Length: 276
Image (cartoon, rainbow, N blue to C red; front, side):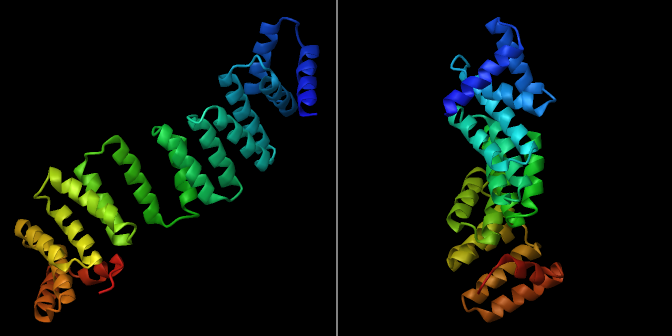
């Protein structure tokens, strides 16, 4: 029945236009892409999909165009199905992922929208509309730090040896407890390139502190303070490490001095999800 219906679509278009197959195909492609009349556009796209002479590229674009039109008409389920069919033919089509993300977002499926936008951006990091729509969807779904982590992931795909980006991802993972093993790998990669980068030593100190590896945490905080002795953030981290090791007097001294250097540093550390 489906094939018969598709055949009727082809015949309907043929009856309304010239007999030259090339001219008909060109008109059909134009109507599928740009027609202001929804019925004509749907008919043209469906005819391209059904025509065995259509190239894979033509069928992919027809599925996408028909999906966009179905989404505009509120047929979200059928639109998502069309984008899925396009991706089965061409899994590298960033626009199909983008359009599927837009439909998911419009229907309130924000997690699915973000996943589709991420797939689109993996294929085309310069797709600005995907970044914009993704940011909008993130406001309704996952925790904001996960959005930051995804942004860092994308940036590191383009610049994998960037020490600042590696440190930022290490720190983001360390603070939020996303994956301490991955956080440690990021910090180690950054320090392999810049061994005396005090901010990375501080980040790795927090990773070790959360892992319960207090000796290594203390060594990193000591190394960071040797480079920047007046940094209250590093000093407070060392104080917490002393406290975890049962060295109350040293801990209290470090934490008091850190609070003098950077008033409010204790409140800041309270947001780092530490349980010592």
